[in-house]
Length: 256
Ligand code: SF4
Ligand code: SF4
Ligand code: SF4
View 1 (cartoon, rainbow, N blue to C red):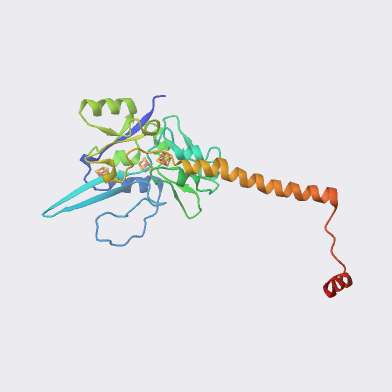
View 2 (tube, rainbow, N blue to C red):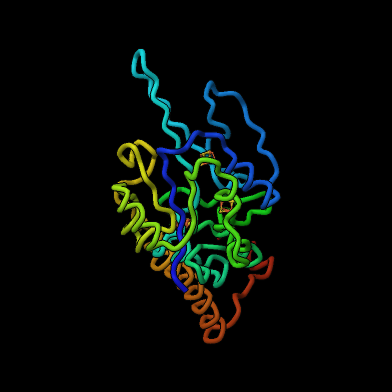
């Protein structure tokens, strides 16, 4: 099957947040309790109950105010740090369409995926299970558009054949973020400024430290534990159990 992807043309976004609401409705996510921070951005970040968020970039330029908006969510990476570091088979996985979905029943609450994601996406709910955008894999498998895409009134959000979306964007003279990064992202962005302005890394990469922890430090720790246990067992077999001194013997030793 040909890989599917989202295209987010940030230059078209009006920050109406229909996408946030549609996602909550489809996924039956409760409302987040928020406070007024002096910004229209609400909530201010992804949460366990918010799989996509409109991030407001508010730039005060003296007499001029510049507003940029971006739909933040899982970017459905081909080379996905979350999938790579997850030690529980099937907890995070690629669907046939190339989306990164998950099975919460298989999540073992290790939080590796949080640290393995270059985009700060995975969150943990009250049950300490992973949550994030799953690309509406349930809808897509049934030939439907993702709920957020269907609800977007300005065609900021598009979904379809990845190669075709790229070809159309190129034909329209648009430069894309994510075309080649991490094996090609499943969410391609048209930006109106540098990636850093939108809190996107210029050259996203999976943090090497997570592999050092998962593949070196943790196995060594486990090896150390079993080594200590093995040494104790060997001592028991060859020397025998530790003898406890009789009370009068202890008194005698104490009086020496
Ligand atoms: S953006 Fe993060 S959570 Fe989404 S697929 Fe990539 S690594 Fe995984
Ligand atoms: S694709 Fe589905 S799960 Fe992901 S943000 Fe859109 S509505 Fe939410
Ligand atoms: S629904 Fe479309 S236009 Fe509205 S905030 Fe979401 S991405 Fe922007």
